[in-house]
Length: 188
Image (cartoon, rainbow, N blue to C red; front, side):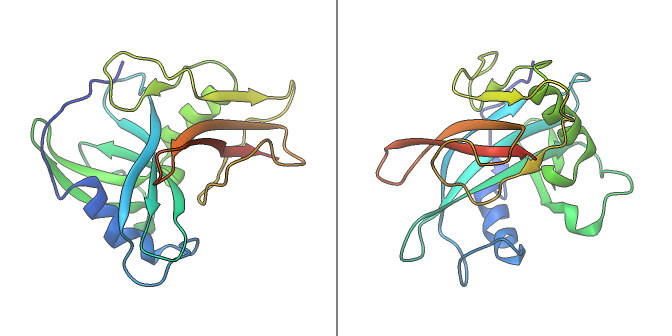
């Protein structure tokens, strides 16, 4: 079970993402985003070493808010053989010290645990509450389908996408505080 430390982060997660997000090819804004936390969930590392968070941030800087799904891996040391673009940045955690923050879509442990979630082998945990499961996260995978997750980066509310054989859906909050649900991960 992940331990959620309520402590300081320097820089904060939102500060890291504000610098990193505009560099991504799927970023829909122009210029620096103005990010707010909108939701997410966690998965556990069986070894208890790596933090795995599936964060939703909403950019409210443009004409319409855009919700981004950013899976993150928090590691105590650099990830060996990681492509340069995988590193989001580093931060100092008030309890754990320096952490290397990676794009979870490029982290092999995050991808393995996400596939396990799709197969029903592991549960999703609440983003900010120690030991709590997140019952709003739903995972399905058709029998016999390979658990090959594709991360959905720009979130849209709605049901299953046509042609999918699996998905992970969850809820997030819009800036007006309404709650919506959509696909965070799809399997085609």
